[in-house]
Image (cartoon, rainbow, N blue to C red):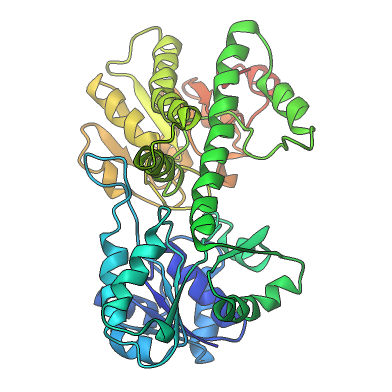
Length: 432
């Protein structure tokens, strides 16, 4: 099939590359000329394991193209995927849909035959209805169909999630487009992927509901970890104990910092905004957002206690600053709250992250990037394991601390307290 992906961000690029690898002819379109040039030269603007190799392979095979020409790309394609950003509006909790509607207005000008317009971007309920109205201003309704096909790609695991999805959700109000979309995904369905066909509005809500529920699980286990610290119980025993219940499951029950990234923070806010619009009270999700917002403050209080309330002039090292491992994504990472706070308190901060230096931290006073773990921890008073990269799972702290002993605060519970304490180092973790 001939596909057009509008937007070469995380969703558009990963989906476009994977669709081309399934044998489709894919054009990835973006108005950013520098980004398109970068992609044509075999380089990707995001960190995602395995994506570069897959992209180069399909680009060479001419199954994958990159273009700035939206009009031409739409005319040459049968299915148009809208994969642009839907961030939270400034001074609001609702989703900013300007990029979506701008893309739709451009598509409306280029419909030359029947097209299926698919929203892969995460959009609130009724967005598909509005897209339909925009398209109808310039086209007969028999010339297009609007479908919701939310993505469920985890950063760092995106290729695997695309090829072996838990489910494929298609929200369509007509049989023709439903059949075409099912055929498109047939190579994945034949491997065992569950295909769920729903109404368009239901598909839009499924994405928000999924992320809100997962955010709730993270927040729930973090709150239990607070209780475990006060009652001398190991949170990992609790996670295993409740996770073995098949009705609950063990995923997303690992205590740690506040949830972050490109999805959970904005999507929990957006579903509240939608609920407010329809006068429905999602009190549970509101509590999740409030608890998560307080999480970094609570962990910073723990840092202060570990340092005996003496943060000024203390040398603190962050190992990992992204919101999670296997991504370079800094969006809503708790490090963006913790590092500025500690800097204001007079701490001298160094950090190391496998994905390199971060522009978000460049202008913060007394914060510097080091290009190795060894350099980052040298002369530190406190080392904070912030992100669970594999690079940090087998560090020999004893060798690193020969000249000066430092305290370790493991915010991801990577290490066994017994093993680290045997090395003569002070060790703190979450909920243990």
